[in-house]
Length: 267
Image: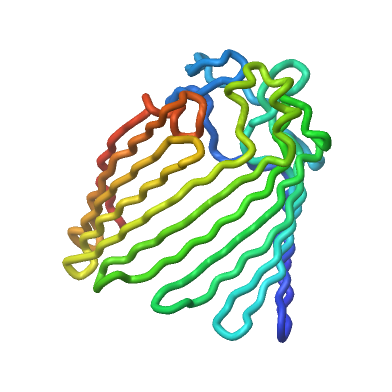
């Protein structure tokens, strides 16, 4: 349910989701990933069993205040619900979703020949106030800074920096199954995206590259698509993961590299 109020200077969005809806997550059915409990790369057969919040008690509430000052877009956010990934464990040892609440802001403005965006937020882990529970995600600050512009005709480049800071990882690390694999206090990721359009925009080539200097891992995703007509489009791409450690975000996916080809018909 979404309610929106419009004003002369500021607008308000209120959203209520009656039942919790998670993100898509790794469950071991198609991709292997690092399991902190076993300390190794895991492949689950049957897939990972997840205890998901259900009923009206699992509902989510979100709020956004937004407006413009000249050409600058400003927004404030608040959310009360759950972490969207099953990064917690219940008393039976099953993966589950930890309750959380967050508040943040975003700014988007034209700078020079491009567009600058900045975001920041605080994620409060409601079941881990002291930061000493290894079965519950730590509270953390997150921020993002990006800039996008056209380098030349039909060639667009976007740069982005994303960062995380855990609130109190030392206490969590002391009770972690293997402290050497516990999340670090700081994490940073740099992103580059290059998009080139040609042949009257029928051909699109795109390179999406991420590198984390803190985790020493990376993710590369080159893609290409060609539209033969209004009805037919051929596209393909490659996903490449790697890293020096088997427990980081992209390093754990090193064996999951893949390529795909897709033919799509619009009607």
